[in-house]
Each structure stands twice: as C-alpha cells, then as structure tokens.
Image (cartoon, rainbow over all chains, first blue to last red; front, side):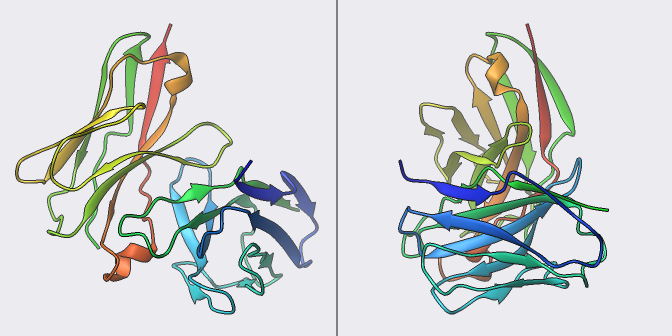
Length: 114
Length: 114
C-alpha cells in the first residue's frame, strides 16, 4: 500500500545527543515536510523540500537539519542545539504539480530527550 | 498570512449532526479552505477543501459563506471515531508563498458522547 512511513514510533535520547528521524514515502510525491507538535498545540513547520537536493527552512528550523538525497526519503536530524527537542514529529508529503494540494501525513515519531 | 479562528472545543451526541465553525475574515480571493482532522497520537488526515462553492465528500460537507469570511464543516452523523481535533486552514494557490505550507492553529477538539 502507498503511504508514509516514520520510524521509530517512540524514541528516547539523552540530552546532548543528535538523533535522526526517518521518513519514507512511496507515493511518488515531489514535496515533503517536517512538522513539530507540542502537547495541546497545532503543528509547526520545521523544514520542507519541493524537489530532490533542495529544501527550505520553515518557521522553527533552528536546531534541526534535513537532507533530500532521494525523492522517497526526507530524514530529520534533531541536533544538540535544539533547546527543547521533546515533541511529536510528523512527516508529510504532497504532489507538487497539482493545482490543489493535499498533504498526506505519516504516523509520527514521539521523541523524548532527558 | 490569513488566519482562522475556531472554538477550542465542541461536544456532540453520537449519530447527530455536528457543525464545526471557522472564521477567516482576512481570506484572500485565491485562498482555499482546507479541513484536516487529527485523531489522538496520529498524524492529521485530509477531510475536505473548497474555494467558493459548498462541497460534499464521503467524510463530510463544507459550507462556505457567500462572502467567504467563514465556513462550516458538517459531519452528518457523528460517530465515536469522529472524536478528534479538527483544523481549519487557509492555503494559497500554487503561485503564492502559502501554497507550500499548511499553517495549523490549535483547532477544535470534538468530543462525541455515546
């Protein structure tokens, strides 16, 4: 089945460590996105990518990095510079050349840093 | 970016219709109105979208005011599985900056009572 895969579902790390969250899609979508969600809040955009080897900062990119070496994959690294990394992280994708856009979301990764 | 205003929470009885309101008084002529919903601990999922005319799909109906400054998501018969946070989002067309993002507010938490 087509969809977006995020792994792992739960992730625990010690403060000061970098951690990479995986996001894979087999929908053949051009655009991919990373969001962060804190308890009781809406989603906030971290990074997005319209095509391979290109990505743009979203509203809260500080302390995060991404790469887009393949169309199917858009991993997110939470670096030690991110002051409050504990959150629910959501990856999404959308078809870029459609006139009307719909984003498809993965199941999310809940990151806890202690 | 144009913003939306939604009630923080609403309640409905099972098998009754639910009307979820959204105000977007600063909407521009090219902004589409999108609705997404998020079940607990899951990624958001697309519900419906529209531009000017009312829209129906298998999940819901979208009623858009004539001046487009407000809209209402209608669930015709609420079920317990419809309990979620519902987000009303404005999204620009392909050639405007907001086309690349979905800006999520805090949404409306819908509780469905058995």
